Length: 139
Image (cartoon, rainbow, N blue to C red):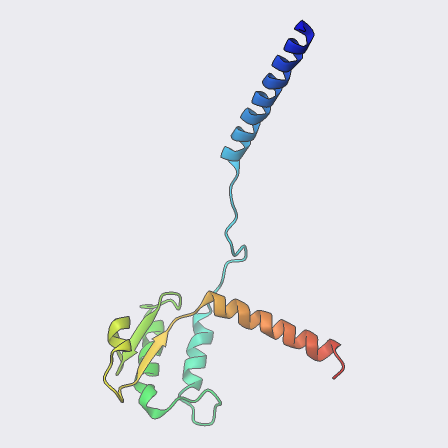
């Protein structure tokens, strides 16, 4: 009986020691961000895309009503007032709140400038899937 009690004590001590080790290890764990490769936003490339929006011969061409907003966004990037990560709304070339942009009068054009990480990720994923399907599957 004494032997069983001694073994039970040793087992309990071993469990406590193991728990203490795990607790100490848990304190030292540093978690990685959800996106391990940081997203790099290329401002110059975005400015070029925006300039393409002003070119009537380009597929990204935007209607004349947007030109004042597109030019304002280009200027904001050039002046380093926006970085492409935070969301910015413009009406008639002026920064407005999201509420103002959403509740604008009928016929007034608004521009939302934001780089969405989720959409960026999924667009890359869909491109990869499309490439795989195009290259691998015989249609």
